[in-house]
Amino acid sequence: MTDMPALPKTDAEWREKLDQQQFAVLRQHATERPGTSPLNDEERSGRYLCAGCGQELFGADTKYHSGSGWPSFWAPVAGAVETTTDRSLFMVRTEVHCARCGGHLGHVFEDGPKPTGLRYCINGVALAFAADD
Image 1 (cartoon, one colour):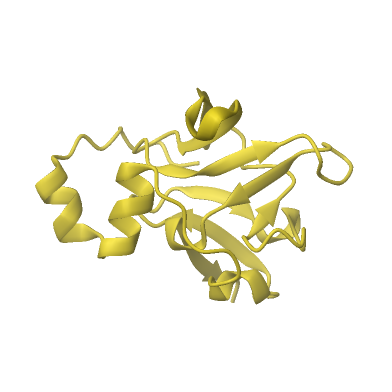
Image 2 (spheres, rainbow, N blue to C red):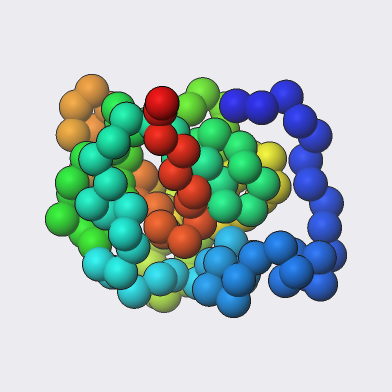
């Protein structure tokens, strides 16, 4: 996690920084279509960053293939994400946000692998991948 301050930006500033799909997901809580992210098949060692602000969110060592159609992780970097209750779509889910910029990342479910039993189901367009050299 970075020690940088939160990023208060206007919608216009976010629209300049993000492409249309990233803006829809990160700022408007949309969801990308399952199976469309090239990060689903990313196997290299590295870090997954917030596409909005660049904060490190997940290590590649916590990524796994959940079969859900979205990049999935069993744990975030300590302090990198925050959660809220999402009551949309006539159900209750736990929504995951970047702790630095507040961008919507996806949801977390209690059907993941050990050691946490959690599945952070994250929109690939909300992430940037930085490979280890």
